[in-house]
Image 1 (spheres, rainbow, N blue to C red):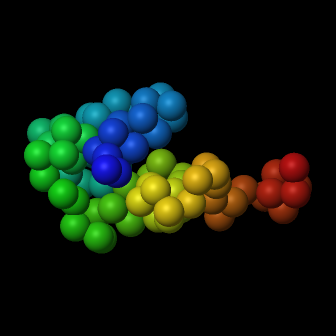
Image 2 (cartoon, helix red, strand yellow; image 1 turned 120 degrees about the horizontal axis):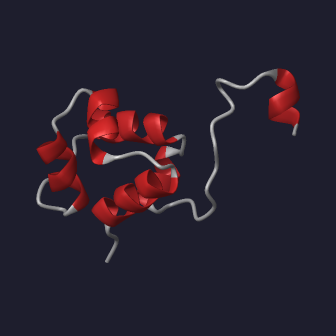
Length: 83
């Protein structure tokens, strides 16, 4: 069975982002982030999209559809994107 909460937590920790920082970035409470990560509450699709954008992963990766971790190049220069 797929564990969305664990995926969010794992990526967040790999990025060095605390629950508090993620909560601030997506305008949610720390307890809400905790409930997502423990699967006590399923985030709505718009919140999942916000989490994916904040953590720089695709929705497919976050949902477990895409197996390779991709990063958004949206905020990179052309030179950085080419690298």
